[in-house]
Length: 318
Image (cartoon, rainbow, N blue to C red):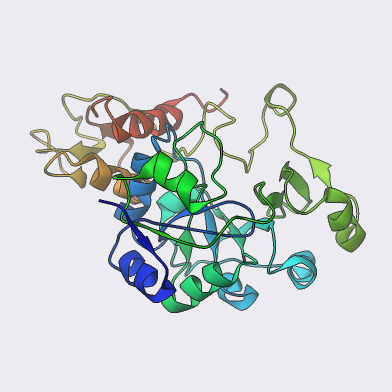
């Protein structure tokens, strides 16, 4: 049963226990999980019915907390000074010692971060003391929620709690700006107008359509067929493992497997989702010549896992 809370300390305790809690920001209500906890992050996708592991925005109580996880440049610091707390999300390179689970960033080397301008959200973030990953608190494809009642209509019974925070004053999602690749690219318009951003850092580009970006490595998720890919070739739905292959296992490992990374011995799709990107990275460094991935069922989070494995296995020129 989903409960309605009015104390940020109670909400923080649930998040630290691995539960999902919706909370108000100035933009829309977010569905929050401890961003360090891969299984909790996987629960976000499950609760929303989100079909793909798109990168999630990680929320922080202040800029310095965000800078502990990503590497800001002078532009990022200037934008933070101008618009944080506020409805601006910055995509920046992850630090080598970043504590955020890879699933929250969809396995990319970047992370989307922001500091919300909402007293309740900030109180929750300070009390939790951890980055909180939070997309909008609605079922995938539905209208974003701007009240606790909207969240209860969408997600009651799917999450632990909703922290009551009143109606969201901005009512549209944050602006997302990619600063990770050297330039400045608007990935999503939102609560901070692009003209205000350009007044601080100069001209901002717009995200390039897929057809015009062939051959480029894009920072935004799900735009290229070959994506989230290790250097080693990946073979899907393996029922046997070759002598030169590492095994990405789901359930009891295949006979003869030497190097094995277990997604879930018991066939738990949430556990498998939380371990997928770590598994690909681990096996990529195994010294083998390829990765054999055991079959994953299509149901629930399995569809998202299969999607990411298919992208990892796609030809590099795709």
